[in-house]
Image 1 (cartoon, rainbow, N blue to C red):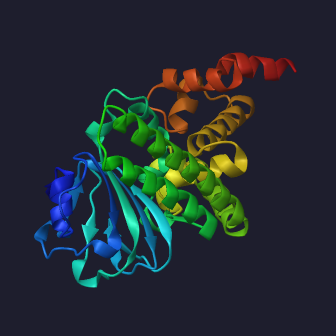
Image 2 (tube, rainbow, N blue to C red):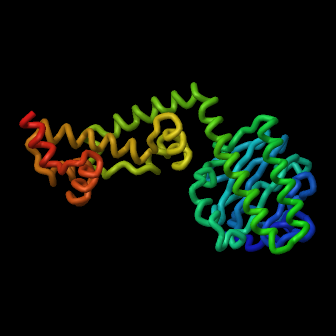
Image 3 (cartoon, helix red, strand yellow):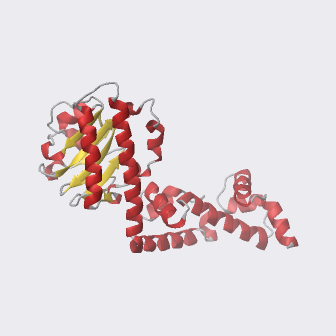
Length: 300
């Protein structure tokens, strides 16, 4: 696997001059020519990339799937994510911009911690953000300000650029929430499919395979884990993990009230390796220990 360590190396691979700032750059895709280099066949980089692609074509692959870029979209990648690019299919005259900034640029700044809270850096390419014309204009204005700051480096540059990146990410959060809402009909079908998947998984025969994980659920929905959690949170107020726990506790209550199984037997039947883990989760969600819940139900 090839590693692109610096923005300078990335610029060279795009046949561009040296970046104005060593740790952050705004690239106009109309100026870029992808070098015929083996690195594109499988690479990771050390920087964040926010791609605003307008009328761009070509295919990029994450995992085993290809996705077309034939509309204006905003996509995000974080450092160390494995990527594949088919240079032969890239349109060198595509329109758009790339904002790239090295992870070191965030050091000692609050954004270094806050950026991990933006789940869309782990979304799959087919979960990219589709922008309205006004939304594009808002983000392009920010990109131009960042580019301008890269050209006059002084002691204020880092703080000003990072405040602009923070603003861009806040806008992106807003736009993603808008996208979740405007795609309501399709999302409701996904939510129904997710609920059916949970019901099927939580049949007695499946639970002993182990506790359902967020990644398993997302894979079954053909979505990335972060996208599924954000989608559920917007529409239901709970993320994927909370939905799984809710189902677990519901099953546990059934077994506590309708069977004579011990707490350990229930824990095992629900996929827990240790009964203590089950008891801890149950108490956290109900404010009662499992046996306390059973006794209260009996006397009620």
